[in-house]
Image (cartoon, rainbow, N blue to C red):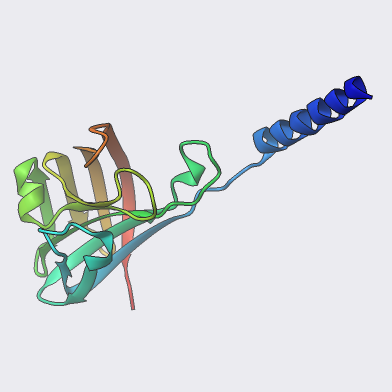
Length: 164
């Protein structure tokens, strides 16, 4: 009887672990461009709930992702990277602390150890406006987790379209 119970538990655990390995999670990403906007957040509390895009005088670029269930626990934790540039700009390039000056921030939502808002101080962001009004943006930034000290990196080239 004891051996049968151990065998049943073993098969159950094997079945559960196999299901976890075969689940496929498609990552969700969004690229938004806001006109006549500005980024607002609380630099003292750095809580993710203080982040907003409000009416202003700049263009705000916002990239959000659910991290495709990284680090493998099949959770969907939203994170965002946002920055702003002058509304009249046709092209730009920012490096390191220039990104911070343009309100370049990374926001981690949920209950992760590194949740909250982190100003970006390392990397490059460049972009240019295309004839159709969209923007081609290149991003290569790094930041350290607020609590873990882990180094994170975002590297992508993407087209942003104006949000209506």
